[in-house]
Length: 184
Image (cartoon, rainbow, N blue to C red; front, top):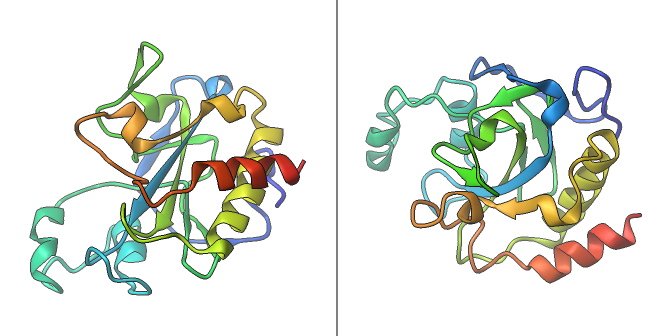
């Protein structure tokens, strides 16, 4: 996967999103955060994650969506169960994925991180296709933003403990890190 100078992946589908802004310091991109999402919870292949990140979700489409009303969130990329990658926000811009967060004493992780969402739940195993796509994508990100190293790839749970649990116990960190190393 090739990332151009503006932080856009040239080989994946780009989705229109207005839920982002400028980073305080574009040169400080130094953390990769892995998340999970499914809408409704536990249902895969629906259009709702895409609609949420693009700001057009119908909150009346499912009873669990009522708490999403007026929510403005995004991720840089979303990896579907099939391994297909969608990009919503260029990596050079600040996506709104981490919320209240802190890493190694630095608050507001959105300022210096890239957020990747996996279609899934904390307890449903991710697909091999997702791990493959995540490893290739992560390697490309690390090449383009060398401050991101394997020790600076974390789960949402690591930067927002007590508030977030994703990517959850179903995420196989060892498998992912082995795949990341092999893609070198």
